[in-house]
Image 1 (cartoon, helix red, strand yellow):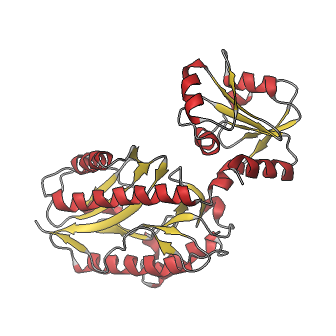
Image 2 (cartoon, one colour; image 1 turned 90 degrees about the horizontal axis):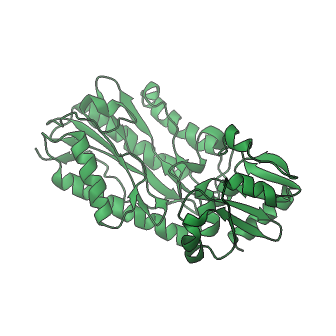
Image 3 (tube, one colour; image 1 turned 135 degrees about the vertical axis):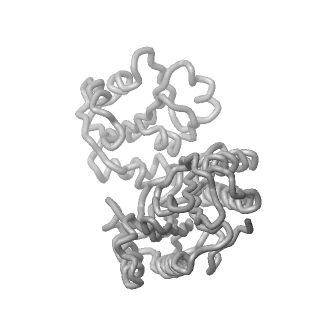
Length: 351
């Protein structure tokens, strides 16, 4: 069944005559269009792709399941002219200012997660793209381990990694690459800074590549030379938490069950106060999408075809931190770890 057909089934279930899709990621998912400043009006028997003349050629090259509607004023005004009945709009994406442009005979109704919910279950082509994004990212990690040296700044490491992944076919990075070294490794999202990396520093690297519109998301922690016994212990706890939590990620298991398991595991080891974030999230065309183990997905059961991260971490101020993050595919049986397994002992980079 096509993606538009599955969406139309949802519209029937929600008693909607149509849906205005304005999130560019969702537009791309439904049509294959890779540009921006466009919208899609899906009804029971038609699909109107609304954009302006700048994208006419791109539309004909990429979109084969919708009719083209060109506007000269505003795409939402054009959508209003074609919408009738009760029509949903993407409340989580549309601003109030944009909403005020929706006029006409249609009755506009806010909706959440209709298209993004469809995106949670990946097909074979999507999985292939995610796997290639992982392959590129993992090659980038090997490059970092081969080239990082004391005296480099975190920004230098991040920029070099980003460019290396692009040289392998990545169209970009999944997010701003995180390089947090030394005491900054205790910052879960320590964006790369001008701090100089030194011998003895723990280094947390959180990065990902984009390939054909799909992302990867990996975190590894290593040490420049020699780690303290406490940090080696923390690495071992996080490693074991990662393995044990991954085994919980099965079809039918609620997100909150996975999240609570990981937090209880680290709490039992005496580090509960130093693990403050969620255990994982879905990935695909976006770096954070459904389902996941926290936030609005706590009550959502995992489903076959979900791709999610598992990312326990421990961050001790004035000491350092460790996170190990892998990308997991939910199957009808055991979960499949799509990323290469992190080593059971802390990686040491010679200095």
